[in-house]
Image (cartoon, rainbow, N blue to C red; front, side, top):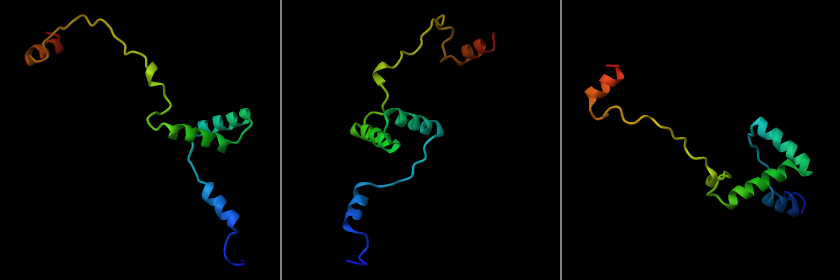
Amino acid sequence: MPGSGLPYRHTISMVTCMKTTLNIDDTVMRRLREEAARRETTMSALVEAGLRRVLADPGTDGADHGSVAPLPSWQSGGQQVDISNREELYGVMEGE
């Protein structure tokens, strides 16, 4: 049908594949470009694969939270003042 807009096959393509604009840090973009070349694929394919991976499990951000390093600890020498005693605390802070 002339004048009825886009052919049917084009409207289907627009529904299943959408173009968008993203602001991506230059460093990330450079790494994306290098990785796409190394894998012999497109940057779009890598971005889509990454998004699918993140969206498959929205409870994670990609970080391995099970292997977080323990917090540092040290020997402080023990309590030097009762912090609920204001006068004693001020005396220690002022070096009396």
